Length: 411
Picture 1 (cartoon, rainbow, N blue to C red):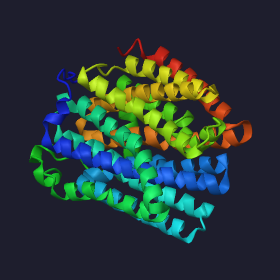
Picture 2 (picture 1 turned 180 degrees about the vertical axis):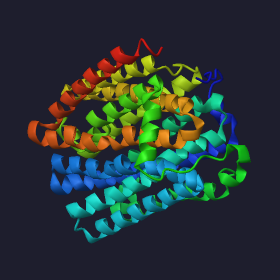
Picture 3 (picture 1 turned 90 degrees about the vertical axis):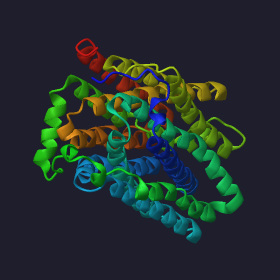
């Protein structure tokens, strides 16, 4: 395992990473604005936890089915162009949502189709952007880059609801979502000129062939299975996504309503911001003092704290307590998820790195497909508070088993 850099914010020494961080944060902000507006419209029109669960499922299915092949695309083609294609699909989704808002006749099938396309865009963006980090920063600064990148994404989660609210109030939903499409453009432009990709690699660093079939996927899974660090972190990410993922965010309008606040829109934004604020705080604090060296044991303990915080959030009724628990959840979620990602990237063999990252993306993102069932559809039966609480409890048990299985074998 590579040594952990002790310098604060070490990845920011590289101009390329600074541009990457700014553009990624903007893209994530636009992503969140679109989700905030679309989830709110879906909830206001249909008032259905099951439909919100379906929205989660349809959004994450592409990650489950295409992540490994997306890693292969980044090997076979210029990964900058792969990310740009994802950005163009994001832009298309925002424009299409604008048309749906303009006609005022939102239908369930339209939401499902747009969320699937949005998921495909995310699949193209995710593994390729993680591979790009290896060309921007040296190996010893990879954890810093991964954690700062995750912090940038949560910064988008933090400011996205506020910017979305301003766009909604000032421009209205139609013009607001059209303006949102423009926020993706800086990433498209920077990647056009960024000095990375096949032309800038030494001949000795050229990657192996891309994923071409199911056998290649199984080969990557065998590599993960034989490495305790890769296996434990992939299973941890898969379990977190299967039971919880981010499905509770799609249910935030329902949680906001149940808190009984006078202004549901403000309460909804506050809940989203509390979660993101905790994650943003984690990124700043952990990078400032170079804390929490990447270890599987630490990641598992942090995941257990995440379960407890989300379970408390699901069952709490006091507004201040709810916000505090969400902030704690955001703090530990960024901590353990970025640590798991960094451990996988630092320990994946170079010759199969893209495929291993693709499998990890399938686990950490694709398994969120099922969180729409464990929280969304189950929530339509027993209520979203109990569905989240039971999902958190189930993940707590699984994470505890992983800790018992791997924590003493892998320090």
